Length: 140
Image (cartoon, rainbow, N blue to C red; front, side):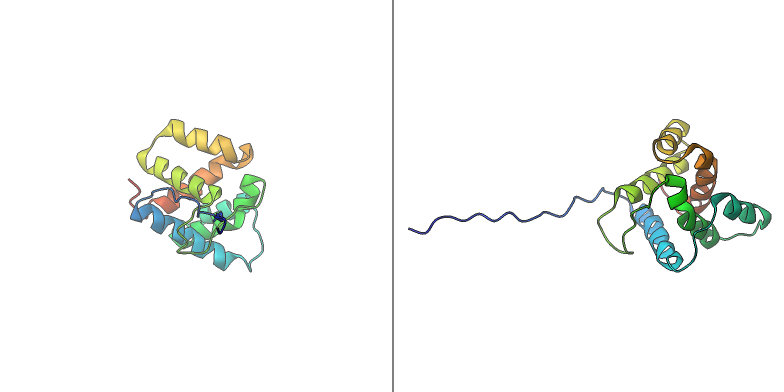
């Protein structure tokens, strides 16, 4: 008789269900993260100051500022997957949730999400950047 052999196969992590608009928001940030890899990291305060000076700053400019400064705001390297990847890292899930709560104008949830991950001196600026980027997406 042949012994029964069981193999354990690693299951992919479940994907947090998000709307098409939320996934588009995330993929936009993922593309921007890829383009920022070869650029030097920027200081969050300086990046936001430049965006405030140029009133016509685009969605791409805000996304670039966020992705270039996200590590500084979190106090550690953010994990961002390649565009189109269905799996979402904890950092990506957090960004999507923050953007969705901003579109719902849920101040309590926004404050909780920012306090749970972002260094105190960077919360206002991260809120500004994510808010401006999420305006271009229907994250309901």
